[in-house]
Image (cartoon, rainbow, N blue to C red; front, side, top):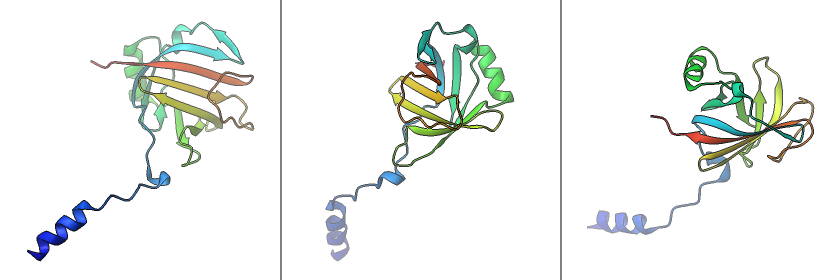
Length: 146
């Protein structure tokens, strides 16, 4: 009987809040279609070779023209690695390119929309996901995988 009373008492206590540093950012894993591209503050038509991307954990592929090319590329290489640069601000990332150069980047995930901004100059830091001089800015829509 005492065990049941303890269980009921403990079970009714509110759970402690999870510290920010232990919370994981939402996952962007999946296939994405680039629907907007902006280079140095100028909107551009999305180049055909930058149409599809895949995110898997910290890794993002290069852009591909077709989904078949994308599947092949992901078996061969991961082009970019995006590491959290500040656990309290999970949208801020350190983007490591295929040459090992680290660039400042910002990821913003809102449901099936992913925004990504990366600074071309490895010495510069950005903190907002928006177009600007020296920034490549992309908007993606999630592709429903079959």
